[in-house]
Image (spheres, rainbow, N blue to C red):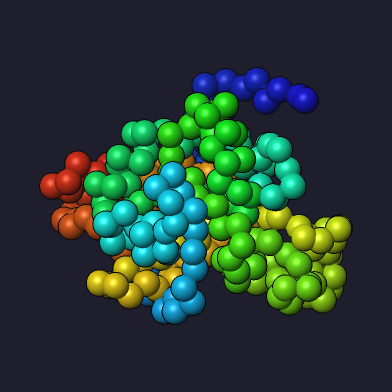
Length: 248
């Protein structure tokens, strides 16, 4: 791996300012995309999914734990495996108590769901020292319906909003090739209105990678960061302590 070119301070400033313009444009585009995502329509979840957690059986509504929003991490853990996916585990290592608390302050619960039986999840969780809520969807259609377990004998194969034929045409057939069932990563977002639950968003593949702190998670939810902004030209301030916007 080669190192960056060595230049004078003046040359570095010129290059850095050019990159800053691109960074500002990316920030503005991301803000616009987040707003567009919040306008995405939602679908009511009517199928009665059942999960197993430390407290026994739980419904999808139970997973909200009283919050308005729910983020489900689809953690790859096949029932036949003794250990969870190494990439999912690397991401799970970054789920801190602070992150969970910050999300909860915005009325949002983050949990992990896997298809392996609860006893395997609990054993692996204890070994890793994790504290986040982790539920088993073993025996339910949840993983298949949200397209993170691929098994043609249960449901038509689809991943990242493409069928197997569409993946083959796009040159991404590697996502759906292999011995089934295939476990895949993803994250799904839900909104609760009383006792009614709605699916608002799911992302997969690289789109589901860990991307930062609680604000990055909240940007993918239906309610967003839930802050009231007063934004004068060039600088924004929030009564809720958010980071000022210096993108202009």
